[in-house]
Length: 316
Image (cartoon, rainbow, N blue to C red; front, side, top):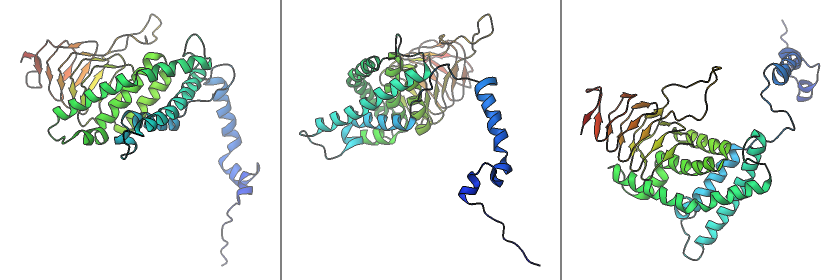
């Protein structure tokens, strides 16, 4: 009995409209159904000219460039000296800010409701200029976070180890940059920056969250901090902590109300241990300690300790 070897279609045969491959997958029917979904039944596209979306890959490179400019000897080139370091920083900033300006402009046009009152290139240049002007202050905040990590973690031996090795440090650097963009109105870009940090570290901080100085995330995996959370100075949190919303208010027609304050306020000098879930617009008072794996939905007075054993609060 003679066995025939199955014929493998060539590239040209596979691309032909009447090829076996096309008939096997019934592509004409699938493509037509996707067109109906895209253009009619499930359309999410705004009317008007198609626009190019911002690029996550470009933003990753921009973030790397900004981080090198902030910490040139740690993330850039180790052999920089007093004569050439400023040239290096200027070069990295120039490239990163040019790219950022382009991505902000793309996002404004793509999403259609940012950079009010218009989408002119001059608007994005001015926004990027304002962003750049805040970088020295941001670096100061990041140094306060770095010091907090060194003081708060007995395993930390030196600043370089924390700066280039701790996921919490990476996440907070990204957040400090994303938060400025969010405040300036480039919200889609800010959200993409936050998601890049989330992908890199497993730490999910909405760019709208307000975080004071000396912030330390130890370990970090699974940390979630919501959009309207407010965190004071010298706060330390551990892995799997959630600062979330308890419920989602709706209007008279049942639509979610966007932007309402719905996440916790954590005052200065608070420690929140692993697995704690804190929900709603409640206040965790200054100097309090929230134990691991507790569920908190009510205000906590200043200088309190909340544990599973007490299932409540007591003065420290």
